[in-house]
Length: 213
Image 1: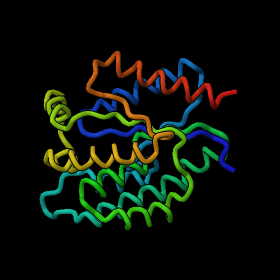
Image 2: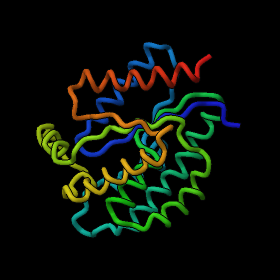
Image 3: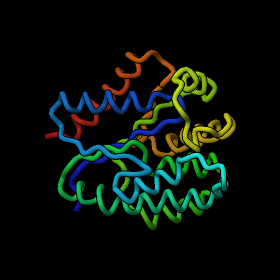
Image 4: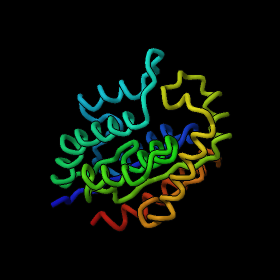
């Protein structure tokens, strides 16, 4: 029986997800809530190696969309079995920087892979191990691109996609938020940082009050 709690953080390019993750870490630490932090793709030694293959820009061979999807789920299978499930079974809290919603958004929306195939993999690999809470950092892709350019860091293979790709990603994320409103909470990431943090804090407080005795 899974007695722990599972939180995920999602967002598109330039939405400030990394900043939000750090804020959430610090806030939960202040509240003395012990959380195991992980990420996707990755989270275990093997899954991190798959991550490197997935995100490293390749000039010698283009990765097919189907290959990307299957590698994402290969990493996820390892991540679930070796990290997430043992922690949740032990009653621990787990927070992941991306999880299953990212596959629907990036491979389904971004890559235009038929959702039927993603749902089949989801049912097989993830099953009923779904997050209890998902924080979705939402921003218009055009604004996100501007922020990413100001950041000035090197982009991975997926971050190098054109804006049309991220428009589809965002649309799919928002469609899933409408489909699962009790789980997926949309945060307006276009607001100033202190407002974004207030939004996150409010959502976390409600979740914690409902789940911490």
